[in-house]
Length: 282
Image 1 (cartoon, rainbow, N blue to C red):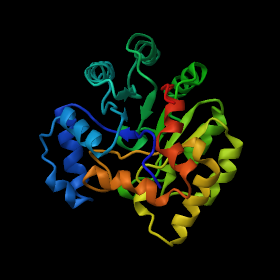
Image 2: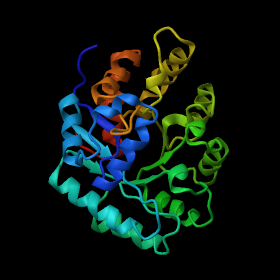
Image 3: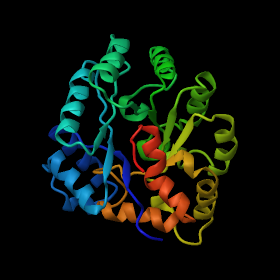
């Protein structure tokens, strides 16, 4: 397969020095190769690593760990993207924030951020927390993309998010939601066919899932079947600097190895993501 026309890393975590340091220390426990990456590496340098590896654009996620941090983090996202136009910044908020709707309006209307990212495990909340239901309702009406972490429950030492996530889809069927990591390890991937047919506003984020695909294995065949049918609703990224391999080029190369044909390769490399974030590429 030839190089894709563009490459959008659809899942990255370029953040403040404190959060980057914490993230790298965390992933080192699982991926020892990250010992090669200095804990003090600034976000701009991490971005350059991704560009050197082949990324033309990067969708960046940065979410608050405590209430009261959201506005500062969202401003940081805007300022970082202004310095680096190849970065597509997503907003976030914390379930403990009292002014959630104001944060949403400020993020999307004033800061011009692209969508929202939530991580139930790290942010310590239930997907259907009553305080989050108005948030989903507003985002559903606005129509912006929402990336929700799913999957890897054992890695986090938590319960599976399968039941909660499917309940979210049922309750907010028009929410343009991206299932980050595809509930990997928590739901058999054969279930996605029915779910994707039922919820046309659902997209899958294959970040970190392809890292477990090995040539000729049953899992790889199952994921290739999903890609063959739904590549127009799938995106792929690195999770850098907290991905499942180091350096980041190893993760980017997975896409060509797993995609069954050139059209699906182009979809996961950039087309689906460009459509989701309204990036005009031809």
